[in-house]
Image (tube, rainbow, N blue to C red):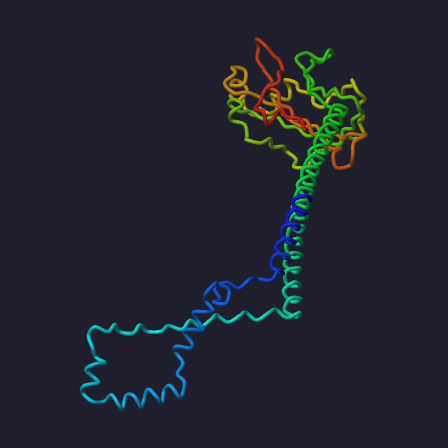
Length: 311
C-alpha cells in the first residue's frame, strides 16, 4: 500500500508541473539591444516615398558618365545586406476546457493504473488461495485413503479365515480327511464345497487352473457355521477311492511305484457373518498328494500356488 501512495504522490507532482505556465524562449523582445537593432533595421530597410523619389531623381541626374564614374569608385566599400529577424509566434494559451480535459485524462490514467495494480494483487491472492485449497484437498484425500486402508486392515484382521489341514482317521487304517479350521476372529458360514481327484505325472502336469467335475460348487446339506477355533472335515481320502480311480492294474502299479501321482484338490466357499454384503464371500483352495503304496501311505499338502490360495 505504501508503494501505491508513493506512485500517487509522483503523479500529483507531475500534474502540478504540467498545469504551470510555460515560459517562451528565443523571442527578440527579451534580449537587450534587440529592439534597437530591429528598429534600426526596419528604418533602414523601409523606404520613404519622398526619399525614394529623391533617389530616383538623383539616379536620373547622375546618369552621365562622369557622375557614374564618381559613384563606382573602387575605393568605396560595398553595402552589407540587411537581415530582418521575425519573432516566433507566442503559443496560444490553454483554455479552461482543454485544462479540464487534460486533467480528467490524467485522473483516468491514474485510476486505471491503480485498478491494474489492485487486479494483479487480487489475482495473486486468488492464486495463493487456490494453491492452499489444492494442497488441503490433496492432504484430505491422502488422509481418507490412509483411514480406509486402516479400516480395511482392521476388518481383515477381524474376519474369519478358513485354513486347510490334513488329519488321519483314527477308526480307519490308511484313511485321511481334509479339515477346514476357522483361524479368524468372527464366525464363518460354509456355503459351498467342491473337490476332485486326478492322476498326473507330477504337479506340473496339472491344469493351469483347478478344474472340478461340477462347474457349480455343491452346497452342504445343512448349514455349517464355524466359530473361531472350530473345524470341520470337507473331504475324505481312502485307498479304496484310489483303486476306483485307477481303472487298470497297470495304472495302480504305476501309482504304487510313484511313477504317477494321485492329487486331491478342492475349494471351500464361506461367508463372513459380520462384514458388508459386498465383502462377505471368501474362498479357500487346497490341494493334496495322496501317497499310496505298500511301504507308505500318507496325505500331504502339495500342488501349484493357484491350487493353494485364500481370498
